[in-house]
Length: 525
Ligand code: XMP
Image (tube, rainbow, N blue to C red; front, side, top):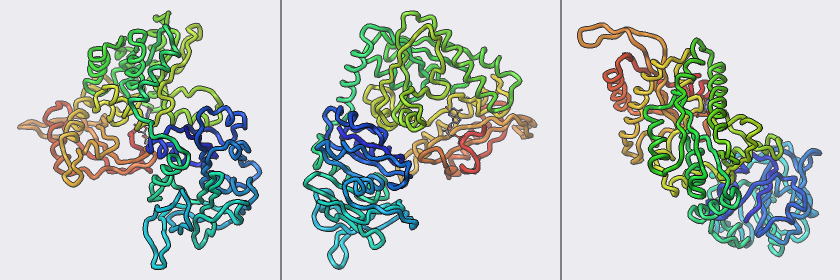
């Protein structure tokens, strides 16, 4: 395995992704772990030191544990990791008020195992060049003893250094971001050729190991899991069921704010197809009752969250023999909670993962997806036999249609919205973009209909109508923090609008939302 020590860079997770894409297992840990932690690592083959926002010279900056350089394994320092390596091994790094940020062309010097043969172009003078992404203020100004120059740019004469006898390598640029064209190859070379890791991180092996782990962990105990129909809890359910079969019971709380036929799909996939024990709680009336008369978005979220926990507690409280609570916590949640300095506390995800259970149940937590990234969770889901359409579905908020019905939530509104939304989604699946060969569903990151509780006038046949309006929303985004509205083909919008108005009695007008985030948000509430 590879250990990645995190010094607070926003792109540390990308290092782990690139390493795992190379087929090598790795873990991220805080940069200030102690020497004993490093000594305790079984099967350690190499260490990667991440970048940071801090300066290698700032007082409060984290120091790389000395044991990193004594562990007898190769070490790759990236950006801050490089500066720390230089500073701690007898070289020099200096603070600079000139920040270099963005695209750069780096010249590779001499032959090193890390960069040899990897280049984007060759200059007229015959120098191999790499196109990279830089982001740094500090830089290394003197090589530590034993190191040689590996790469340089005009503004950063020491952009890479190596002590090949000890297996120490360092790069000022970021190989983990896709802007560094050869970055993936550089990281793959470090972990496989230099550290000697096998490319054996793959799904079938992972499933086998995970199943064995779950069995060893829970023994003959019973486990409960809150199933939402979302990717994480679904994959966790399938995996745990594979390991312990009937010792698993899922509780599926239907708040009446799910998409069309979603509850049926969840039940048919898990109960009928997998034969998993699922307690289906149709709590529509309870939720609608609590939501009556409430129109403030945050108040609605709170009510839905609270009610959810309450229903889950009541149902799971009936399973007195359960000893474990399973959750679909995934790696980014774990890292987030570590980063927020909550220490070892377990990340409890937003409300639809269970908030608080009765203390007297005394449940232990089972989180079999803790080591996986979202795309790995999806691959695992498919490998476990979950329908790809479920695994690759757009994200759906926990409060569901509760935040897509503006203002007060009523069952009547939810029923209209569900049907309009289903038509939109169906047409997105059916419409193929000929340039990419992909459906518009796959070309968008999230798409849905929003119910506007206003009435507008229309004509239908000979009659005048006075009905509700829906807005269609489709966005493209990589991280959901910013998003562009999707330029859907007019023909697609036309078809969706005409189908909704003709098929959903009660809606006579459809609009398309052309606002990007920011300043708008993806959801309307
Ligand atoms: P916004 O509207 O903030 O949404 O641009 C960003 C992403 O978060 C999802 N979202 C939620 N997910 N509970 C959730 O589980 C919520 O209350 C919630 N609000 C927004 C939204 O669907 C989008 O993917």
